[in-house]
Each structure stands twice: as structure tokens, then as C-alpha cells.
Amino acid sequence: MANIVFNVSLGRVASLAALPAASDALIAVPLEATGLVTDATMRDYDDLSALLASASNEQTTMGRKTLTGVTVTVDDTNDRVAVDCADITWTAATGNAVGAVVICYDPDTTTGTDADLIPLTKHDVTLTPDGNNFTLTVSDFYRASSTA
Image 1: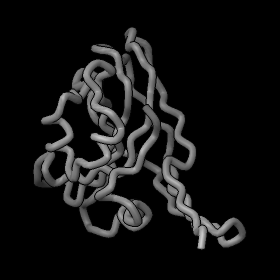
Image 2 (image 1 turned 135 degrees about the vertical axis):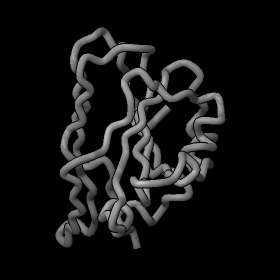
Image 3 (image 1 turned 60 degrees about the vertical axis):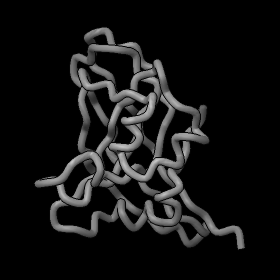
């Protein structure tokens, strides 16, 4: 397993991370370690509902987190764009072991379903919740560069 960008999001992450709509957000969704589908299979899901309908289960005890401090930085010196956010903390984390976190774009946080959430990136995480706080340190969760 590795960190991946979902096919539906290729070339779109920086644009969506800029939060172009009035009530949109980026959401971190923890997935249980047991039953994760392969990266090759996972990257083909076009929405969170389809992903969760697969063998991959959401770790619902910890819950989803809305990302804060999201920045999109164009780096002309290195010919790339980086998307970053503040570290994500789950307080008193409990439940089943986590094997990955998927960051999704929610186009409207006031309505909608998991079918509306677009999976952007998946990050491998090894966590066995034990009641302590867990902070996921995020550093440029997405980076794209020009190779032309």
C-alpha cells in the first residue's frame, strides 16, 4: 500500500483544495486497517460512497475531521504546487485499528451524502486507537509538478 491520488481527482486536487464554493470543505475520513482494498482498486472509486461500499470500512468511532488551515502554494522556483493543511487531531481515539486516511472534497457541507464527496488522496496510517489523542502530522498532503 502507498499514498495515492484518486483517478477522479488527477489534476483537480489543487483547484478543489482552494475551496471554490461557498459551503465546501476538505474532510479526512479514517479507514479501518482490516479489509482495505488495494491501491489499484481504491484509486478507481469516484466518490466516497462507492469506496465505502467496497471492502474498505470507515473507522466511525474516531469520526471524520474537517481540515483547517488549508493552503495551496504555487512554487515557481521548483515548478510545482503544494497543498497543505493544519495537523489533524482525534481526541481520545478509540475503536478499530486505522490503516489509511482518505481526504475528500465536500462541495456542500450543508447538504448531500457520501456520494457527493470526491476522494482526493489516500494516505497510509498505522494507528491502534488506545484512548489517547492521535495527531496526524500533515505536510503537503498533495504535491504536483511539471515534467514537460
